[in-house]
Amino acid sequence: MTNLRQLFREHVAQTSDSPLMLEISKAQGVFLFGPKGEKYFDLISGISVSNVGHGNPEVVSAVQGQAADYMHLMVYGEFVQKPQVELAAELVRLLPQQLYSVYFVNSGSEAVEGALKLAKRHTGRAEIIAYKNAYHGSTHGALSIMGFEEQKRNFRPLLPDISFLTFNNKDELDRITTKTACVVIEPIQGEAGIRIPDVEYIRALRDRCSETGALLIFDEIQTGMGRTGTLFAFEQFGIIPDILLLAKALGGGMPLGAFISSKAIMDSLTQNPILGHITTFGGHPVSCAAALASLKYLQSNNLVQTVNAKGKIFVDVLKNHPKVLEIRQAGLMIAVELGSYDRVKALIDFGLAHGFIVDWFLFCNTAVRIAPPLTITEEECRTAAGLILEGLNSIS
Ligand SMILES: Cc1ncc(COP(=O)(O)O)c(C=O)c1O
Image (cartoon, rainbow, N blue to C red):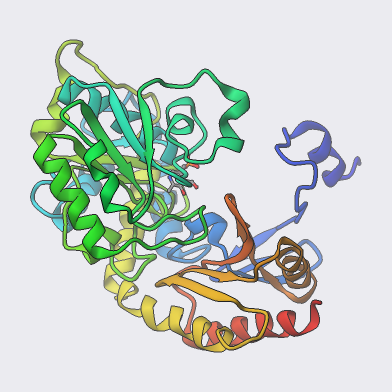
C-alpha cells in the first residue's frame, strides 16, 4: 500500500512546503499518540481548540448520542433543533443581558464574515476599522481586516473602506467616527504573539464606539471558552462588546462558530432582504451537542478557575532562563519570546523528538506558543514546562 505520508503530500492540499507531517492515530486528554506508540504532550490544542481535552468522554457521548438521533436536517434558523436551542440559551445565560441572540456558523472566519455584514446592515455604514497585526481568518472579509500586509498583498483587491489602528494608541481613537460601521478587535491578539492591551485603552475604545454609534466587535475566537482565565476575555476589561465572536474551543473539538449580539442588532438580518445571512451547516446539531457538553464540562469541573494557576507554572519555570527574553501570558495563552526564529524552530524540533508539541505564531515567529488543553493538571504543567526547559538548555 502506498505510504500515507506520500499520499498526504500528493493529494492533500498543502499551504506550506515544509508541513510538520506528524501522523497521529489517537488523542487522549493532553496527549497525542503516533502510530508506533509515540507520545506527545499537546501544548497547542490545535490551535486553542481542545480546551476540555482530547477524547473528553462527555463530549464523545454527546456526539454519539446526537449522531444517532439526527444529523443535518435543514439550513440554519428554520427548524427548531434542540441542541442548537439549548446551546444558544446556555451561552446567553452566561453572557451579559445585551448579548442575547446567537447566530451559529461553522468556523471563526464565518463568524467574522457574518458580524461584518451585520454591522454594515445595522448601522447603514460601510467603514470598518481593525488593528495592525490582527488575525481574523482567511476568507475575503476576514483577510481584508487582517493587519499584516505580507499575507494579503497577493490576494487584492479586498474589501474597501478599511483602516487599521495601533493597539493601545488612544490618540488614534478619533479615527472612529459616525461613518464607522464597526471596530473589530481581538481583546488579546493571538497570532501577533499574545499582545495584551491596557484596560484603560479598551474602555476608551468602548466609549468612543458608543459616542459614534460604531459597533464594537470582540473577536474571542481564540481567547474564548476559558483560555485566558475567564470564560470570555472581555470580562477582564469591564466592558461589553456589541457583537461577540466565538469559534475554535466553542465546539468542544467539533467545527462551530457563532456571532452574538442584542436581539435588536441581530434582527437587522431578517428584513430587507429577508434571509440576510444563511448557512447550510452552521449550527450543526452534532457540533452544538458537543459544544453544550463541553460548556457544561468547563462549568461542572470549575476548569476556568484553574487556568491562571496553571499558566503561572509555565511562567515560573521558564521566565529566568537566559534564552527567554520575555513571556506574554493570559491564562493558558502564552508566548515565550526567544528573539529568533532559529531558536523557536530548534525548540519545536526538540519537542517533536522529546515528546511535546509547541508552535510559533502566524505573525510572530520569534516566540513559542504554549496553549495546552485547560484540562492539563498542575503536575502535567510542571512536567511539560520541565521538558521545554530541557529543550532551551540543549538548543544553541
Ligand atoms: C482571533 C481569530 N479569529 C479568527 C480566526 C479564524 O478562525 P477559523 O480558522 O476557524 O476560520 C482565528 C483562527 O486562528 C483566530 O485566531
